[in-house]
Image (cartoon, rainbow, N blue to C red; front, side, top):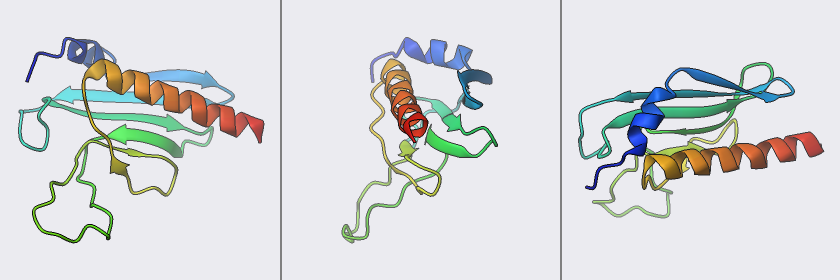
Length: 121
């Protein structure tokens, strides 16, 4: 695996809370862990968007494995740890981690999309 220089930038953002206006906010948590099959990039992360009362409404993380959809019942399927929660009740869908920059860009694009939808209601 090639070195991901963006990891250091991501680590520097650990514990940041970023105001998104209207009471919405983003929290970034990132820390180094030992490289493993489940965490090949060597970081644990949780990037979350919260509504004004604190409930998470969007999240990207790798804290737990995501079960494959029930239509995939065959053995040997690799469980994805990198995943995203697209709404409050979403248990998570696999997310393909490519590098730290792509993670941040993808997450903040989703934040913009969600906030645009929320503000149009």
